[in-house]
Length: 95
Image (cartoon, rainbow, N blue to C red; front, side, top):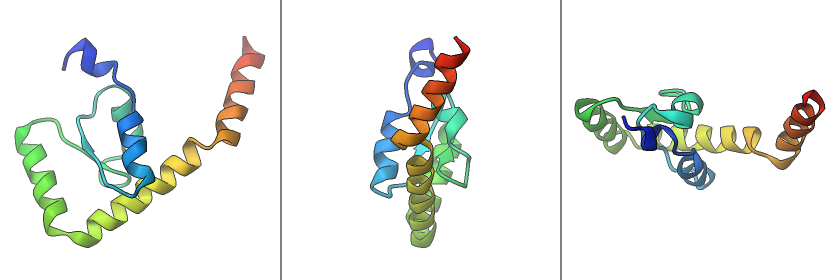
């Protein structure tokens, strides 16, 4: 992957998660850190993996629903204003 791709943020993942849509993404940059493959989304490293993951999601409605729900819960927990504020205060107190 390129420097550009490694620098992308997780905003597309968080937007999809908030509406309960499961994500398949390359595990680069922030996405590689926040997506726990099979838990709150799916990661794919090459064309064969992408095809397999998409086919799995197409064939399994319940998996789509479950991944979408877990992604939404993850984002609500990790990106809520109270939690982010506490992290910022902790960071600022260390600086």
